[in-house]
Length: 164
Image (cartoon, rainbow, N blue to C red; front, side, top):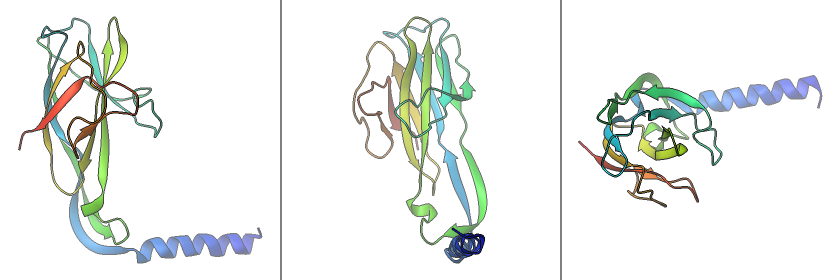
């Protein structure tokens, strides 16, 4: 490929991206607000740690730590939603059709790294979830439509409900 062909290709990609945007100020919701409790057979777990995984697009969402989530001695945890203000929206992939993936991971002192839950939430409006996580009772498959699910073939340990 010649350098002229490469420049034209890059220019066409940039032009297509610019043409597919429309000025439309809006808020993009990047992570849901979550509150929850983490237990094992109904009892708090000494030494347990929670973190948000950095989902790399493979079946190992808890390989890298994105953000640590504090857990109280009673097993309670929470984090606030995050959002961003944008001035333009895509005509090809508008905010009304976009979703964001958030993965809660559990570092258990005896069982190692466990998947708490994978949350797929819409970016167009805020979402608040309540999680009940019991590491003694793993679940497989999708538990709640449009909000949580499991990585194929792997257990998750939290159940979710919307809070508002």
